[in-house]
Amino acid sequence: MLTLCLDIGGTKIAAGLADPGGVLVHTATRRTPVDGGATQVWAAVAAMIADMVRAADGAVSAVGIASAGPIDLPSGTVSPINIGCWRGFPLRDKVAAAVPGVPVQLGGDGVCMALGEHWRGAGRGARFLLGMVVSTGVGGGLVLDGAPYAGRTGNAGHVGHVVVEPYGRRCTCGGRGCVETIAAGPSLARWARANGWSAAPGAGARELADAAAAGNEVAVRAFHRGAAALARTIASVAAVCDLDLVVLGGGVAKSGRLLFDPLRAALADYARLDFVAGLQVVPAELGGEAGLVGAARLAGLRERFG
Image (tube, one colour):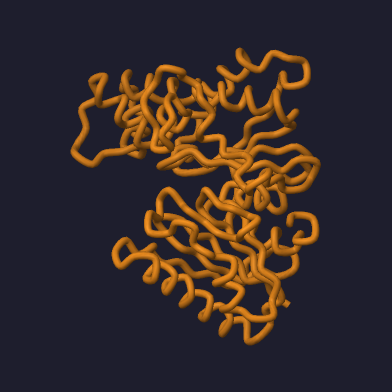
């Protein structure tokens, strides 16, 4: 039997079929519709579900959903910041109606990323894990004592909104000084431009990484600034949750040593308590498939998760 898994975000919708070991045997992606409202976005999801059910030839035994958040687990609804037309959208019920008679589990995309890396990626063997995605935003999820931790509403681990600069820039969440305002890809590029980086219109984190690799001083400073903000976040979460590993993925993390070297150096300065000193931060292994793999695992853990 196969698990149907979905990973729904503001840029793309991914769907897959996973075998009992978490291996994705069939996947598909499409861009998230930007026009037409809630109905059109759901129609895209429903079409992908139908395609997966046909590909499985009736062998779907469970469904796991990773969704951009915030989510509300008790009601099964989602209100993703980056899908503005979905507010209180009854995603779990809609998917359940599309695949009748099959159990459906909903989770945030951050916790599913963490769970996927814990099951089949860089987090194998860790008991207390923080998974982070540093891309156009900063997301995260927690696996505590080997199990996904959702919190009261399903949004635990939303570490992109840890405040690291109390009088800093306003964030899309409405708060101020969140790590996302400093370390996300667009934030890195914005700060670099404001401090003298000359780049072509539309240039972003990828071009900034190229400039840093070529020795551009402002670009290097931008990565060091973002890395220090991430280190402050990780040190804070580690102190609260007693972590043994952090797995870092996303587009910005693909810059490799440009990010990881200053991050690890800053973390060694911030994380000084005995129980967090020496905390390891490692690159994610599953790339864009982590959310699907985690959603598949979530479906298999339904009795423990919710």
